[in-house]
Amino acid sequence: MTIVYSTTLALLGAAFLMTAARLVRGPSTFDRVMAGDILAVLLVSGIAVHAAVHKESANAAVLVVVALMGFVGSVSAAHLAAARAERRERA
Picture (cartoon, rainbow, N blue to C red):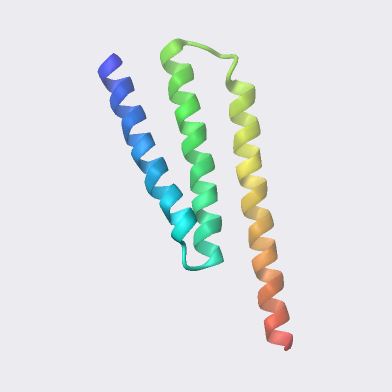
């Protein structure tokens, strides 16, 4: 189980670094918003893997909060992007 746990965390870490690079470099706001959403998903995944390996159910509340924050952030960004597009159409 240790090999699977280590491999999973290494892959999640690599994905986190690549996504963080997209967050910094992203040429558009949409790229940055999506990178932020993916970082939230990776964080939830990492916490879930840790909780499963160590058989801890106390992290469930943290998982729910981080997942909801990621969802609310994505919905807010989509709403903002739609409002900006509407303003551009009017102008």
